[in-house]
Length: 280
Image (cartoon, rainbow, N blue to C red):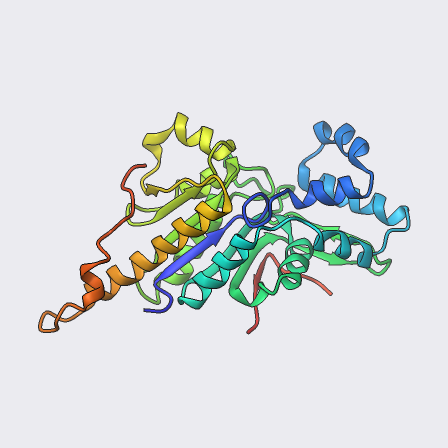
């Protein structure tokens, strides 16, 4: 039953317990400059400018990488990712960070090979040694038209693309984890048989509470990484067993595990590319 479950993770404040952009800006003493410029330009464009400022201060990419390696990630998140991967789930990332930040952190914690795809803002190191961060969606040439998401990325559109890309293989069930408003947009693209795992008391939670009728999938909120790990692995195990039972022929005996895994899911509620296939 490997591959029947597609688990899509947001990155900032979901996989790691901080915003990677803010983490780097704060650690290099550019918070004041960042806050001054933030109201006047898109976040994605602002981060590209912050990397220019860091470069002008003599900060190297090695220093940026070492800073990223210190970003907090809970051991239960690492365990949850590895366990879901080992159970045969197809793990992907959908994030408004950038490829260099995400790759650096995943490699540091031995998680890179767990993910089949990373959807985020592309980045590259130019000839001067400065990190350039580009928008996932070129909003200067066209608008994605979503009023929930930032101009550089509509997460709902990316979820639709992912679903279309895997639909030819076999029926897939999705689990989506996130914390922000754009993650709410992604969650709106889930179907009734999918699972939505929002971080409680974060922007995504307020949007769900305000607009519960818009969410078609089951909602399985989490507040800490112990709860996330427990709920995620229960959901993946349950879906895998349910699909195994559904695919048994009518003449076959029902395996014992089907009896004990009735659904526990709530019915309530160097250049990088845009999409990074992870080599194995």
